[in-house]
Length: 190
Image 1 (tube, rainbow, N blue to C red):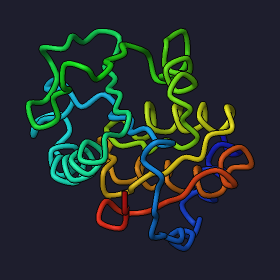
Image 2: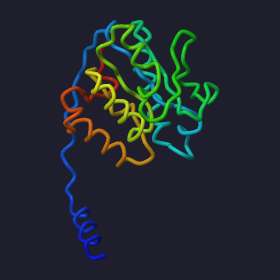
Image 3: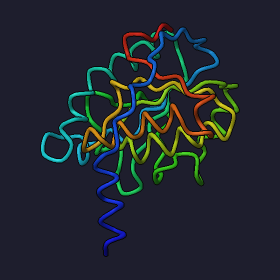
């Protein structure tokens, strides 16, 4: 037991790292896809995840920019959800793909195939479950040699620490740090 207490005491003394660098981003619309992850009524509401509700405007901002430039836009749902569960603020258009999947939106889905068909080199990831869907899908994108842009004000989780960890991980992990660009919704030029 004393070993466990020592670990917890060490964790308590950990200093918070400096915030990551946020960059302005200019993207090429024909080579970039917007991935809108798991923005559903069941997990993006004031009772369960009010932080998600607060990001809806930022997600809409990026979505509108992407649609104006005719970018590839792909939506995802958790494996238990249906299209009827999607938030009205970010409903897909008829021609936009909706994928149901677990946390890694590449795993056993058509996402990679669709991105390759459209010659996509960069993905912008927005949505909720930052420490689940956003993190796992960003890692999946990095493995596939895609540049990943994450507007930190357009992702959410249940608690701020989960968002902070996700952003720290993307900025510092050997698997993602070279392929991830952290930004804000208003710093993306399409």
